[in-house]
Length: 275
Image 1 (tube, rainbow, N blue to C red):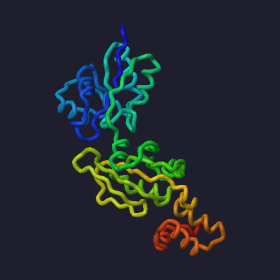
Image 2 (spheres, rainbow, N blue to C red; image 1 turned 135 degrees about the vertical axis):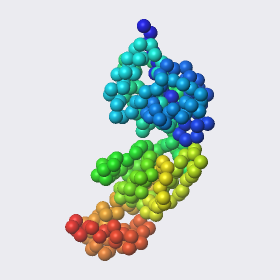
Image 3 (cartoon, one colour; image 1 turned 180 degrees about the horizontal axis):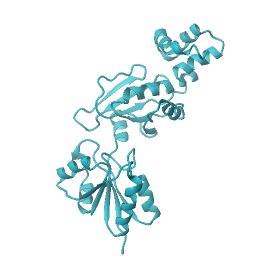
Image 4 (cartoon, one colour; image 1 turned 90 degrees about the vertical axis):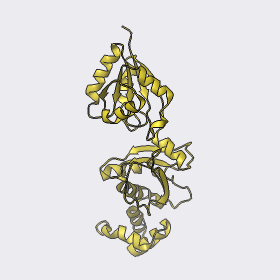
């Protein structure tokens, strides 16, 4: 029996009208649709007048469902793989089954769509020829810092996805790792309340957080004081290790980073055990 084919189908990241003609034709032609959340995909299919057999494929059932998918594909079925928004495997499930299909000799075809990361970079006016994309940051603070410290010295923008309940904590974590930098806060891309705000990590404030966010953080500048690539607390400690007392270290950090001495002092309060 001839093997089936897996179609990686991109879906709109907000506005349903953005779906491509080819994506619609593909969804109409397949036998099954594997989706991240059937409750999310069903309204899209209803909007398009498409009725297909759906089953959920997400990070919690990936191992179980990829075997079902392989069985269908080896049986000759045509299966579309979609995520809630954008492209499967870009901060969404899909990479495991796609990789397995390539390994097993099953044909894979991609039907692309926009992604929030590239759309946000264009919308905010950034040169997107080079950037680093970190997706969603880990939940644990220690894991956030470990990840961010690997990229803080790059001179290209860092792009991060953030949920409304995480965006303030994520901005603080980036500030602690990168120091103060410019940041573009893109929200609700392609939706009714789409917008972008330009601020700095030190002045970051979203009230009230609502919708999904893309944070675009400026790259490191070569002319900056190299100590500015440290978090504020590490910056203070660096001056103290160079022989400055705490008061003078705070004064120098404030000048280096364009902050008030009081702002730096507040961040330094819990350093007494480290000095």
